[in-house]
Amino acid sequence: MNLSPKFQYFYTKFHTSFILYRWHIGVFFLSFGIILGTTSGYLYSREISPIQKQEPVVYEDVTPVLSPEEKFQQYLSRIDLDSDDSVTKFVNPDFSFDSLRYTPTGLQKLDRTHIIDTKWDARLIPEARQHFEELAAAFYEAFQQKVVVVSSYRSYNYQAGIKARWCPDNLCAKAGHSEHQSWLAIDLWSASTNAYWKSNKRLTGYYSWLSENAHLYGFHNTYQKGREIDGYEIEPWHWRYVGIPLAIYLRDNDLTLAEFFIIKKREG
Ligand SMILES: [Zn+2]
Image (cartoon, rainbow, N blue to C red; front, side, top):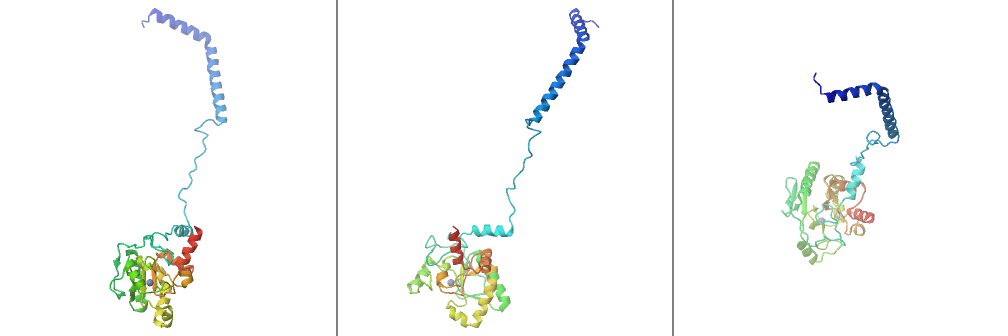
């Protein structure tokens, strides 16, 4: 090999130095290793090693699983008794529709397979219509009779006309205060008096069946405890849609919608 004299000089110098100081070099690297090991051990013990000593992350369950009872309480707390177009809208002599001349949209005529519509114009919102037709089918199965509807949707003007004929407030709602102005209420067989219904065996039987079954289809007998509680005299013929869960809740707890309304308002 043809090495330059300069290189040969440095090589010889380096080799000689290495032989001469090999123990020093060994001791140097040994000390360096000891210092490095000791320092990292110390830092680790002080918990400043962010990767290795990090606490495991615990993710909180942001969607807690609710029990059926908790879910129902949540449903009750969210019930909308105030909006005009809510199926649980509450009206009585003191509480009217926000928009006094409120007119619902999307009303549908009833299928008359199991229903007699005495005025040929009974209409409800689709949800209530479907459930009422199912109720009527179940009634037909029990009695082999069609359910007779004598009144359903009544506009503000129609109700104003009834009032103009001097129907008193405890019997007829003021215009803008009637459940019939919503798309939810229906009068069955005879909108007469509670006394007449009680004296009529056929109607008593029908009422008893409705009391046992109507809530399963979302219907509630709004006026069943008298004027002091419900705002009107007892009306066994008047049923309104409130949705199935609330209808079941009201019946199971022996509450009218007016009582439920008061409880809700007290709770704020
Ligand atoms: Zn009615």
